[in-house]
Length: 455
Image (cartoon, rainbow, N blue to C red; front, side, top):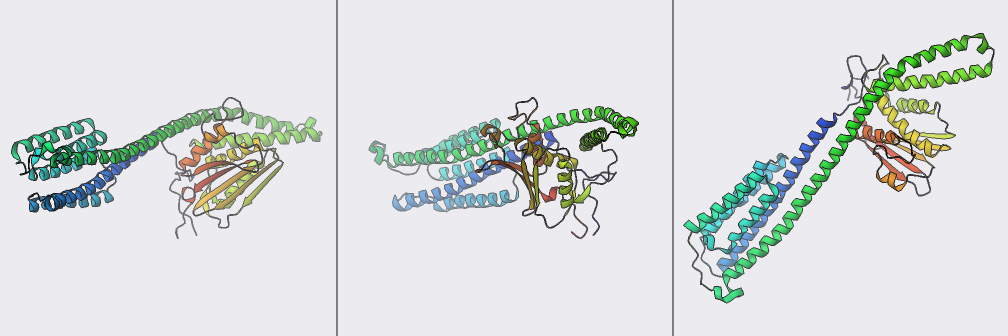
């Protein structure tokens, strides 16, 4: 099979993983969260409308059958049918469209007020004790809507009450206010108050919970944007430093090559061994510099980054072993299907950072397991060190969150978490009960896999 060109490949054939613009991503996610909250609040109004339907049916049946009150039944049932039809239409509408604006919430509340007004007009107008249900709409408007929309609701409800007082006719009910709690009007007011209070407590609590969830999500987004902006600044500094380091590293490579050919060194095996070690470390430094420049979009003629998952992991492990003073390192690769993937220096550095952090805690023994679980690449790095301190574990992945006590510490895992998050993955640290710690890194294969033509 011939692999198609990866969608993230540039004109030079190099393949890079997607890079998320911090501000654009945060703004888009904030808009999505805002729309999601509006949709949840609209669902609350739909539920409240069903309660209104049940309440109206119960009230009409009680007043006409039990109390013998003469009501314009056909007109009231027509209004009830309109309310049911509007709610069904709302359900269908908001199943397809997840974005709810302030104007649409205002329209929904206005329709509810209009139908309530029509029912009150048919049942005594302003003398109906259920006229206080208007307060429910005003309070919901104050919580859900923008300021101008809230005042619109206040004006609309005030106009409705005034219109009911001017144009509706009271029901022919006995004037029994002196009976106190046994008065139909007082009982109606009591029922209206209990209904208002109960609905406000239930639905305002739910709405406020939606808003708190939204505020928490927006706070996380702002934190993420700040962290990603921090990464961008670090990348610029690293790219500048890599440019500056290129010349002295090249000079050192020439000098070491000259030393290796000099008679004074040729005859001294110990010095030759030292020079070879210095060249190895120098080559590693040059590879790091090239990786930094490649991540910054300034690759210096490297070969194509298309590879397979097993080859990529084997290369990462082999490169990481060079110069690391680990006594025993176990690599358990359980991946049987060798998929074509993108080999990216940023991804390599992320895995190496996890291994480096584990090595500092446990220089005698390390273990990395690789597997694929349901379309997800899973890497687990385990050590037998002291484990993460509670404070470090709670703030895992935050910049400068380190127990090493040196300036600039904690940036390695900070970069690991943010690279994984950009690719849609997660990094989960755990302290093991028997001692040591485990860092579980998960990445969706869709973020790094190269699809073939047959797929």
